[in-house]
Image (cartoon, rainbow, N blue to C red):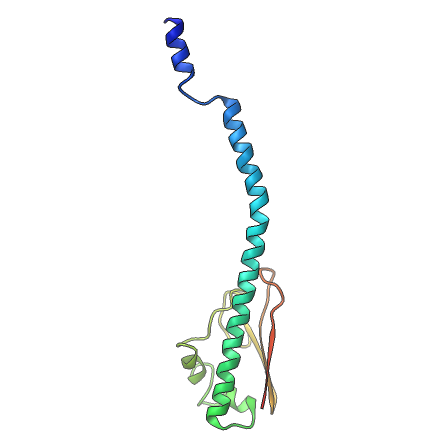
Length: 139
């Protein structure tokens, strides 16, 4: 084997130092980008949860006005506007999923507190979301 053949074989690949430098650069990029990505994902889940709670609040208010009710509790629990009836149908067939909890059950994933003339709706949070907004309806 001549010296020329030996040089050709050695220059055909990357050296260990070059590979280590590339791995180091990728690790630095990951360390910088990952926290920003996780923060953005958490904010997106929170905004989606707030948007879904706002949609539920708007639907409850629309049903309250449509049914001519004077009591939010009766609107939410009536057969004309319950979780499995018109309220879900008005929301496109089902209650929107809460991205903070992964579920879509009123009372579990969305807190609804109703009285005679007021109703509050809020998406339940977990460690994967920031605090969500409470929507208050009044008659």
